[in-house]
Amino acid sequence: MGANAEISTQTKPPIKRHMRNYLLDPRFQLKYTGMVVGVSVVIASVLGYFAYDYSKGQTEALTIQMAMQPDLDPQVASDLEGFARELDQKVLMSIIGGILLLALALGFTGIIVTHKLVGPAYKMRRLLREVADGKLKVVGGLRKGDELQELFEAFAVMVESLREAQSQEVAALDAALAAARERGIEDEALASIVSVRDRMQATLD
Image (cartoon, rainbow, N blue to C red; front, top):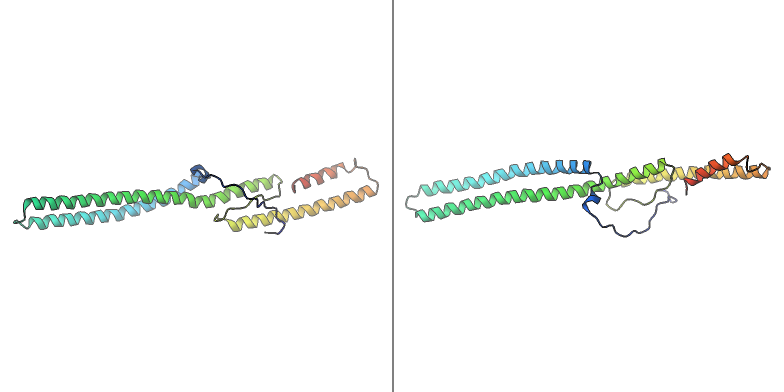
């Protein structure tokens, strides 16, 4: 970015973040996050199913093995079978809990990650509207860690180039107006040119 680019570097007090501050574009962010969470949950559920099925298989194998031992105390066999089924339930609950935690973690991470992309895009749209309205000034910059840093720098350079070109045009008009006044041309005759010059200067202020 040019050395003369007018980008404010004043330190602002930290903004207290709420979830709504991170959802600048809910449609895009929730759609992207939902896709990531959905795919991850499906994969985790499939893997969890195989883990639970393996645990149940072990329980069934234990039951068959105990059935093949007629001299085994029925109470001991019942206790072992009950213990194995409790383990199956713990495995199932652990899988379900793990999937829920994974979904929450990925959902939160997805919103944070998309915010680092949507936030800069949101600011770029606002700055583009300001330039379209004739304000050739870039106020503020992107935060550390935001995406689109290079695009923002290119945009700032473009705005600075427009400012320099506009400034040269204003200087040329000032010189022309000064020469016209030296030749005795009255201000009334130059009013339209002065009006154009003032409008051009307003985009630099």
